[in-house]
Structures are given as C-alpha cells and as structure tokens.
Length: 155
Image (tube, rainbow, N blue to C red):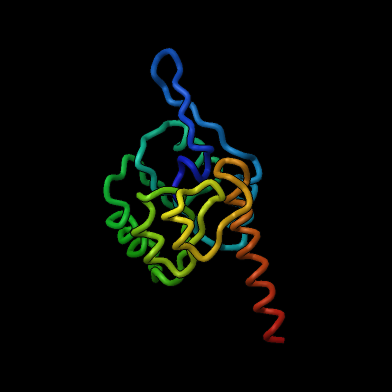
C-alpha cells in the first residue's frame, strides 16, 4: 500500500523543527495485525521518508517498508522477488497517480474513497472510508469476507 493518503489522510503536519507529523487510524492498525496473524505479508511503498512511518510499520509488523521511493514499480519487483510472490497474488491500495502503475500490475486493486478519479476508475474496489479513516481496514475486511465466501461455496 501507499502511505500518505491511504494510511493517513494525506495532510502533512510540520513541527517547528521541520519534522513531519502523521496521524494513523487505530482500525487500520488492527486490520493489519489481523492480516499478519492470518499469515499474510504486508508492505508500504512511500514516496516520502518519515521516522514516524518507520516506527508505525515496526509496531504493526509490516514485512516490507520502502520510503523515499521514486520508482514504485522497481521496488514492487524487489518485493515480489524477496517474498517469492506473483503479482497476481498481491493486493494494492492507492490514492493518487503515483500508484497507477502498481494498480495495473496486481491481482486485486483498491482505492480509498477520496482517491483521485484516475485511480478510482481503474481499481477493483473503492472504499467508503477516506484515507486515514479506516480505509485499509475496510479493504482487509472485504478480502477476508470474499475469501470466507469462496471457501464456503466450495463446501
């Protein structure tokens, strides 16, 4: 997933010493913990660098964290190799034009409710929640619900 605009509301707060401050929603965090506990890997690819994001990713057990990324596709390819994943096995959540190339490559794509039109028009699922307000949890719950329904239909 992307960070700014997905895990956060996209606004950047600067302290007097220039440090960027971000706010994360607890439901997104709980969803990512549930995701990890179900045996799935998670990752964040962000164009910005933030000590706060690094700390939050560590708290949540995020498997892959890449910050200050200019070429998200190159980093995505690294994650596929390191995790031994196929692109078709990956879900991605984005909000802006920098996410489009990844959205086109993954097996399941999602956009937050306040994503730009160019992103929302391409994805498989658009959340009801805005970025930073539980949208990641909504995507996780949607995937879990779909998997449960798929398993029940096989029995």
